[in-house]
Image: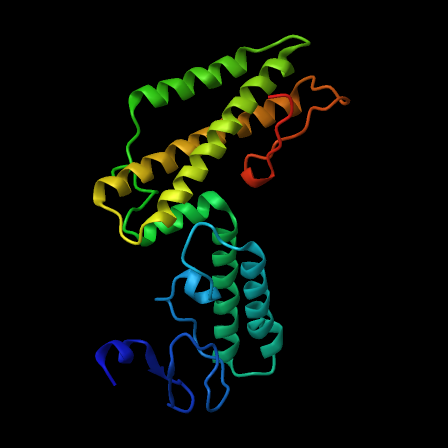
Length: 236
């Protein structure tokens, strides 16, 4: 067995049979193993490592995995198996939450490529962009009167369009190359950070709409900034 193959295997904690690390249960004694911490969420669910994921396939893999390792199935098992079942359930819940949400999925992919999107030192935004965001939020806060929702709606639709286009561009670049140059990676990290700011502004619009005098009739539809794939624009 080559060194690389050895890294992909370990011994069953119960019967000591050599098994693939990605297997949830031992092929010999069927005892549940610990989840392999070296697996990416994509590998754990057996889906392609890319931004443009097939959501039905991801959901099916998640449900199958949860069904196979749910802690309720191991109530009569050993303490170690019960602990492993809980570990599997926790890590799959986290993985599914990350992969099903576009922005989280993009950030996770950037992390796999070597860029920590949560590190402010790695991802820095220009002062001009931050000033634009600040002015936009101030403008939203200053809107008042019976027609304030009309202007908020206009701003909202403009941001949604920019957000959707930016997210599509980010996903396309992530899936367009197996290996990205460091400067390209930094640029994509900055784009990801900009999209997070835009989404916060969208959430602020939703808050203001909920607190304000939004009409209860007409074709004003609520836009969910956490699910860009559901955005619908009318009259733009």
